Amino acid sequence: MAEALFRPLSARDGLRKEWSDGRSTASVAAEFVKPNSRLTSVERLEIYARSYWFRVLDCLCEDYPGVRAILGERRFMKLATEFLARFPSASFTLRNLGSRLPAFIAEEPAFSGPHVALAADMARFEWAQVVAFDGPALPVLTREDVIAAGPALRVTLQPYLTVAEYAYPVDQFALALKKTALRGEASNALAAMPSSRRKPRPRLPRPARSFVAVHRQDNMLYFKRLEPEAFAILTGLGAGRTLAAACAAALRQADPGVDWAARVRQWFQTWQGLGWFARRGASGRSRRERA
Image (cartoon, rainbow, N blue to C red; front, side, top):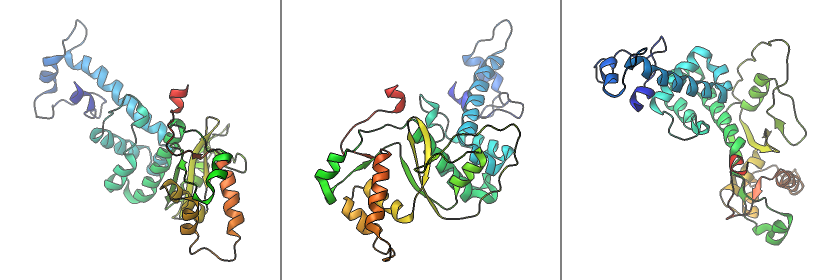
C-alpha cells in the first residue's frame, strides 16, 4: 500500500500501469484492494494515491514560494516530485516534509538548472521560516541572569531562531516576492500586503553575501539582517562560548575605529528584548504544544 502511494503519479495523475517490478499495477492492486460495484481495485487505490500526492505537492508549493519563483512552476513541480519520491512523508505532521529539500537541491543540481546555489539558499531560508513558525520556545533569559553571570555568561539560542549566512540576498528577494513592508526597527515581518492587481515578478537576485536571523514574536514571523560581527557573536553564543569569548573571536579582526563596546551592548539589548536568549539547560514546548 505504501509503495503504491509513494510512487509518483502518471502524466494523467493516475497510477502508473506498470508496478516497480514490471508487473501490471492492476494485478498487484487486486492482491490487497478489493473492487466494488462501481470501482476497480486500481480506481479505489488511485483515490488514496491522488489524495497523498496532491496534498504533499500542495504543501511544498505553499512552504517554498521563493524556490517556485526561482525555478518556475514546471521545473519546481519536477523537483518536488523527484524529492518526494526519494523522501516521502515520514512524520505525523506535514511541517517536516521539506526539511531535506535544501540538501536535495544541492545534491541534485540537474533539477535547478543554472540556479542551484540560489534555489538552495532560498530553500534554507524558507525552511527557517517553518522552524520559526512552530519551533519550541525556552524560558527567556532574564536581566538578573545576565547581571549574575557577567562576561562568563553562557546562553542558549531559542530553538525557533535560525541564524544563517547566505550567498544571495534571499531576505530582500522574499520581501519583493511577497510584496511585504517593513515592520518596525527591530525586524522585517513576513506578511503580505494586499494588492488589487498582479505585479510583475521581481528579478532574480545577484550573489551578495548576507547574514539573516529568522525568528518569531507574538506569533508572527520576522527576519532581521545582521552585520557580520553580530552574526559571528550569535554563532559563537549558540556554540556554547561565553559572551566574552564569542565577542573576542568575532571582533578579532574588526575595524578598530568602531566603538564595538557600545555596538555590542546595543545588539545584546535588542536580541534580549526579542527573546532570542534562553537559560541553558531549560526545556520548552512548541507553539502547537502550548496552544
